[in-house]
Amino acid sequence: MPYQHILVAVDLTEECDPVIQRARDLSVSNGAKLSLVHIVEPMAMAFGGDVPMDLSQLQQQQFDQAKERLEKLIVKYPELTRENSHLSYGQPRQEIHHLAKEQACDLVVVGSHGRHGLALLLGSTANDLLHGAHCDTLAVRLKRAE
Ligand code: AMP
Image 1: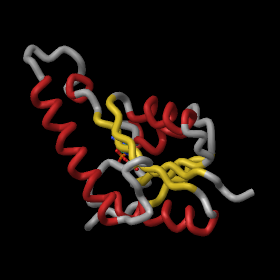
Image 2: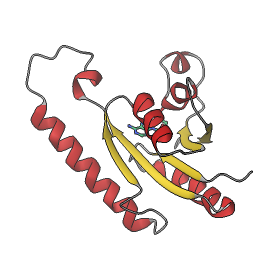
Image 3: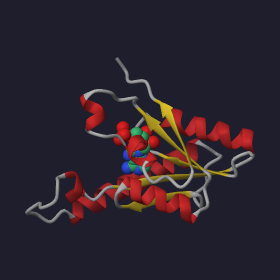
């Protein structure tokens, strides 16, 4: 059975190109719809909870910057459309799973650095996504610049 709706999750760094290209190639070969998602993580979460200052302005800047980067990707990849590109706020695993379910996606594509040892213990989004996944999840191996 070919995939029908592929969701590619991107962190909006320069590393997201190979992930999008793999998802795009799969969408072409499967004749599947292609959607894209980026999750903006709450700053308080990144700082570990209680932060004694108002982060709302910084958070808005972060959201605006993400919107700009997403827009550049839509221009760069004609297969991506504004309608099928999603920007959400929250915890990546939770939000990506939620969107994949809501949009009836049957494949989620993410990048993976193939961490091992201590780095693996610190976790990765790809590992995190496998837990509780409602559909197939493809981790595209990313090569770190030496
Ligand atoms: P990481 O585990 O943070 O190195 O990220 C690995 C992959 O997870 C990235 O290449 C993306 O595919 C995905 N990812 C990481 N952070 C996000 C995010 N905030 N929103 C959507 N996808 C993400």
